[in-house]
Every structure is written in structure tokens, then in C-alpha cells.
Length: 80
Image (cartoon, rainbow, N blue to C red):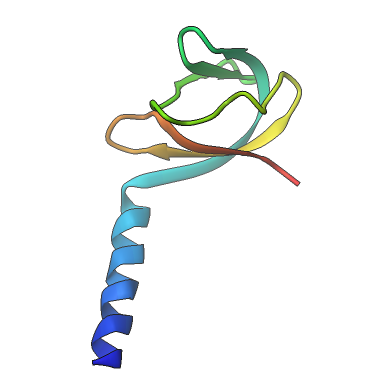
């Protein structure tokens, strides 16, 4: 049973990572009204509903995870 659970967990992690992209960037602008984040390279990324972007500000280096299907940010964290 334990081996089955470990195998299931490994498959789940592999499947989740297939549908997500992770990258790092520097924030140029945060648009709360339109729920977008613009990076210093000029790319603008939409933010999924429920994702808190209130703690990021222009100049912050952030780690971003996006959903491959929608292209929306699903998680954003200030890089350390």
C-alpha cells in the first residue's frame, strides 16, 4: 500500500508540473484593476482570480508560476 501511495504522489507531482511554467522577472508595473503584472522585459501577464498581488511592487524580483493552459499567474513570490 505504501509503495502505491508513493507512486501515486510521484505521478501527481509530475502531472502538475507539466501544466505549469515557472520563471523569474523584475516587476515594472502592477495593475490591480486589470489584474495584470508587467515585467521589465515588457511582457504583461494576467493574474488568476484569488491570487494576492498586493505585496509586490515595481522593482521587486519575483518568482512566478503560470498555468500553461490559461497563461495566468497562479502564484507569485518575492525572490530571496
